[in-house]
Image 1 (cartoon, rainbow over the protein chains, first blue to last red):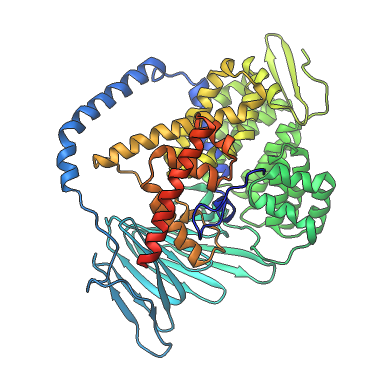
Image 2 (cartoon, one colour; image 1 turned 90 degrees about the vertical axis):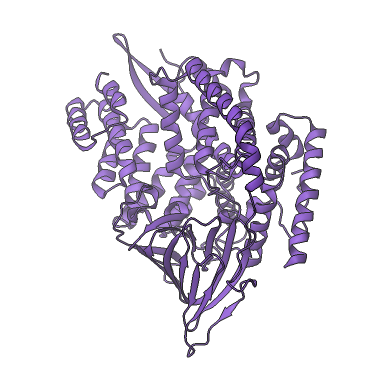
Length: 407
Length: 211
């Protein structure tokens, strides 16, 4: 790059994107595409001038209202400042000896942190909007006052836990982190989770572990009493990315493709690997995550045909993995894209039989119907459509199914 | 009607009256070709354009707005608007940059609106995609703390300066790319970046001194 950015502040690496994970997930992209399809091709009177007239009216009303209300609100608004202890001092680093009794830190907002024997808790940042602590070792129980203004984050190595108001316990061990929620809900973020995050409700429990055997990280999620909204974060979508720093199968410049893929530069990663490289790495690798990365590189760089082999290998080597259904669905989509509807139908059937997350099942059915129609299996397509009607009480893509059946 | 006869990357059939129409797209269809096909109402080409560019547009928008729900709305609006106004696109090859520009402009508008609502105490949204929350899991605690500080400092910046800073220092765009995405001149982009840097450096230094 001719003018690489100079550091934005003395201590900040530039560009920061290099130390961040890509927040974009396939489920999110698919969700937005569904909305775009709806907006572009759906029939709605709630569009064009009507929508804009309504929005303009709302904005005008809001501005008028704000004119009256703003002075009062601004006058009364006070900044809560950083979160302190109930004595008004900064939250200290707490180290509890293995044979000592637990230490309770009482905070000014009536939240409490109980650090168990052997635990080490360090505050990282405390402000009006965030309170971030690091559980360096051991176990701690957090009772966060609900409704507070701050985002609470507990960094625990393999996972970070984000919360608004709840009671939960974090247990950091040598090679794993356990989180147990007693009240409320928390978001657990870890690279080992599909999309990097899972929501845990009261009674929920998760154990994020680094598995030294194959150098993959693995997350095991105990059943939660409440269903999880996010399909990507469901128990069946928990298998994970190859741990950073793990020994690689290749050396030297051939490792660059991993770096490029980690930075979501798939075209560049493919350029480095090439078709032969994808094939070679696929043959060489048994790790599910590496295989999924290879398929991502092929698909997202515009070479879907090269994604087939790694996806098939995932299904062959890890048929019982929680990511197998997603691999089968992706394979079905790639086969469709490659105009091989017969293969696509088989892969999509397999994805459905392996137990896809709820949010992806509807898409799988629609694509299955499409594949069956395109491969000339009209009767099976109608049966699949009947199944679709039975399974989805509020089908969002019924019109699309109908269009396929009419072809 | 056969549109192309190259090896298949994608292929599907559709009824067109009594005839079946086969459409084929070569492995590396360019943006220009996809845009031209989209203008003719080809929905596959639209989806291909979307799949090709949504990753970058979504990532940038998420980082600009730091709120996933708003970012999804912006990305949706940007693509819908782009597909509706394809006739106005002068360089078909530049579809990606164009849709990104639309998204950045929309994000800017939403960000200003959010600031106004926040001043009025009416902003109920929660930033769920802060920089700190996107930190590499292997990041050091020091880096996490710095990212937290940067998040707070960014909140105090004017919308335009924040956008320019994120594009430049988070996404690593060149100055001319920042200017294009923000829809301003190169000189204005530089001015915005200088202002943002000064403000952020001062904040980070101040926080370090207080620590």
